[in-house]
Figure 1: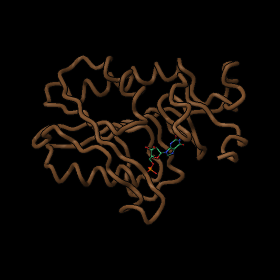
Figure 2: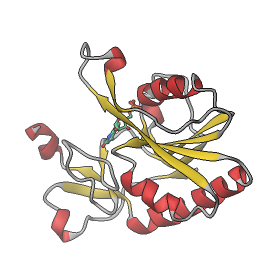
Figure 3: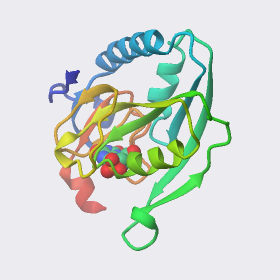
Length: 192
Ligand code: XMP
């Protein structure tokens, strides 16, 4: 498992909003490649369904998928978090799974495993559909904030307890298009 460490300055265009690059484009590419190799060897010959959570997985998923040389099906679950009191566990499902996963191998892909609430809820939903097995793959793992007894089977990078954006991850729906994972300037989060 790779640890992410603060390092580079962000490209000029992003310096007003992004304080530093936590994981560069090159490191992301290398790590996604090695995750793909691991997944390929673990699921070779299986009836694989990849279930990705919307919207934060968009870049990670696209990069991972094109490196997987094995037959697979792809579907999405939409999850949105709300403030306490607006839904069970603060989450609502915005898109339901459509593919049949019964008896199949499922790889559940998410952008970041933080408290674990999102994946615990989705995992319970998936298991009720009786797949043969479910493995979890996340780009980022922030173990410091975990509230659920949950671990991912494939982790891109373990990161410190800081809010990250980029490579699919957002703040207020912005920054998903950054080609790297970065840390926001505190003045951005204060502005709200
Ligand atoms: P939980 O706490 O349920 O969180 O494991 C998973 C979801 O919360 C979002 N999240 C973040 N999004 N930067 C983000 O852009 C972060 O540092 C961060 N931490 C949690 C994310 O949507 C994830 O799927």
